Every structure is written in C-alpha cells, then in structure tokens.
Length: 477
Image 1: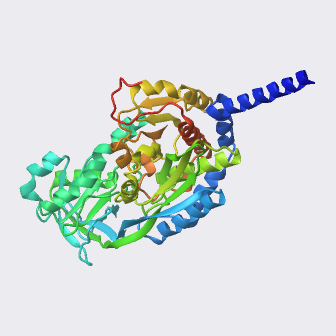
Image 2 (image 1 turned 180 degrees about the vertical axis):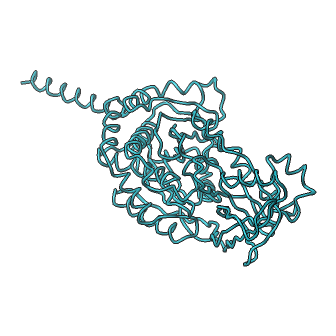
C-alpha cells in the first residue's frame, strides 16, 4: 500500500513538474504552431477590416468617421473580453473643400482652350480666394533649386517636381522610393510660403500613374498657410512639356478649412498577463486615414491585424506572462498626436514597456520581422523564425532604429520596436489616394499578417531573456 501511495505521489509530482515546465516555457514550438495555424484559418480580422472600411469609410482626424471608428473598434475589443481604455487626444481638424485647377495660358494655346489639371489638396493647405487665383507656374526639382530661384518665387505657383522611383519600389525598397518625395511634400510648401509663393504644388508621391493624386501632410503653419496640392504625374509631365514652349499660367481653386482642434481617443485594449502583468508588449496600427479613400491598406490592415492578435489568443485560451496591449492610434496621418499622447502619459513607466510592435506598411505579403534589437539578441528569435517559416515569414531584419511613426517616441526613449517586414512594392500605388479601398487587400496576406503579429506578440510577452534597451552596447549578451 505504501509502495502504491509512493508511486502515485511520484506520478503526481512528475505531472506537476511537467505542467510547471510547460508554464515556464510557453514559447514552445507546439504553441507557436497552434497560433500560426489558428490565425491562418480565421477571417475575423478581414471581417473587422470590412466593418471599418465599408461601414465607417474615411477616418481623417476630427471627422465623424474618426469618431465612429473609435466606437466600432472599442466595441469589437470589448466583445473579445479585452480590457478597453479610451485615452483622450486633441487632434488637428482640417477639412477639404473644393479643389480645381486649369491651365489658362501657355504658348500655342488655341483660342478658347483651357486644360484641366487633376489635383487634390494636401493636409494643412491654406485656401485660395473663393473665386480662385491665377498665377504663373515655376518648376523646381530640389530644395537647392528652390533656394537658388528664390528671387523668382514671389507670386508664383511653385511646382515641386520629385518623381517616385517605382523601380526602386519594385526591388523591395519602397520606403527609400517614397522618402525623397514625401520630404519635399512636407517641407517644400512651407519653404515656398516663406519665399512668398502664391501656392505650392507637389508631384504625387506614389506609383501606378493612372492620373490619380496622392494626398499627405505638409509642414504649413498658421499665418503662412498658402494653398498646397498634389498633382498627378501625368499633369506634371504635361507642364514640363508646355514650359519648354514658354510661360504657363494656372487658375487654382482650393477652399479647405483648418478648424479648432478636435477631441478623439487612442483605443487601448489589454489582454492581461499573468505573473508579469505589469509589463507590456504593444501591438498597434493607426486608426485614422486620409479622406480620399477608405484607408484599407493605410492603415486598416494594421489595426485589424493588431485586433486579430487578441482574437487568436482568445480562441486558443492562451494567456501570456506579460500584458499584450493592442493600440489603435489616433492622428498618425497629420500630426502623430496619438503616439505622442501615449508617450507623455507613460514616460514614467517606460521600464515596464518590454517592446512595441507597429504595423503601418500596408497589407502586402509579410516576409518576416524588423526589430530594433542589439545584434547579440537576434539569436534568441530563432524559434520564432522557425515557427513562421512555414508561411514564408521567417526573415528577421535587425535595425538600429525601426523608425515607425506612432511608436517613435517610445523607441527614441529606448523601447525596442518591431514591425512586420512586408512586400510594399505595390503599396504606394494606393497610398493616400481614393483607390485605397478594401478590394485591394488580399485575404490570404491579411491572415499571414495576423499570424506574424500574434506569434511575435506572444513570443515577446513570454520571453525569458530580456531584450535590453535600444542604444545599449551591442557587446551585451
């Protein structure tokens, strides 16, 4: 009898030890495989993306759509059992008005002929008089050329012509292709305003070239808000050809308004941790979008993908050691005030922020991860890479700085930041345009996206090895 009791006690002790071992090592291959498989079988994130884009639509900060999106996402997270907090944020409120342009005078123009120019106002643009303005067009192709022609700028419509390098984007460097034009779009109108320009136009920053205009933010400030718009590549090329024949005059009408700042929220949904619940792993996307399309790629896929993390873990009844915090950021597009507000509210708790993930590169095929970790830390992600390899997402690209927008303040303060590494070769065909709609999103790629985000969030939330802070010596191990 004693022998039997001893055997049962030993068996129970062995089972307890085995259970404890499993609890202490939740990043085992079997659990990661279950997370991956469950995400790949679910349409939940796509359904939430459809709700966001088809039922709410455009979500520019301060708009009714932005307010409706906050309520929609918060309610979806509550239904999953997440702890939802709405963090107040004051955001810019810019409203698009009429936007038209035509060429009214140029060498060789037949009597009575004008030519329509396709454009769209840039965020923060000032307004023309209600009847519009007419002025000569001056083209420049660099900041240096703009400075060199400063004496010619006053009273003109300055066209800032920097082409988007689609070949660079096609070869996996879409961000590098986007950067020069985006920098010109943000800073160029402000510089032209300071030189006395009547208005500023920029060549649309993006690909496809189907006479679609790409909007975006500018650095224009109160008191110097000249009219500013993006025009299509085809119309830039037309102007280039006509200017070779002689001077060109344009009639431009833009009537946007900059209203007082509006109230909105970051939507924060926590999936509580166990023994390290006070430590946080953020997984996020931005909830706002420009007002031309419905923000499916920018950044509906990021928000829906982050929401899908909690849905996947709930379905599997998995609870991490650290709290996984889903954030739908406010106002990334024209101010990044959501990210800044979160940082200000949590800057005394940065040591409790283990890592932050931001998805804001569209819903293209994910190839793996980007992470701002020190070089010696890369080897600790080998099990995660192996778990994601069956869906072709096993790449880990280490960077000193990931450079995401809303998590930028956290990263600059030392929090390691991660992003999905995605195929963005087509992303800038739709980015900030009327064409950024649900039909452009591939359902399989969104499932992969959720699988990557959930696997990464779970892995980080259960890591034994501290990642360390961004900027610490690479010799640390």
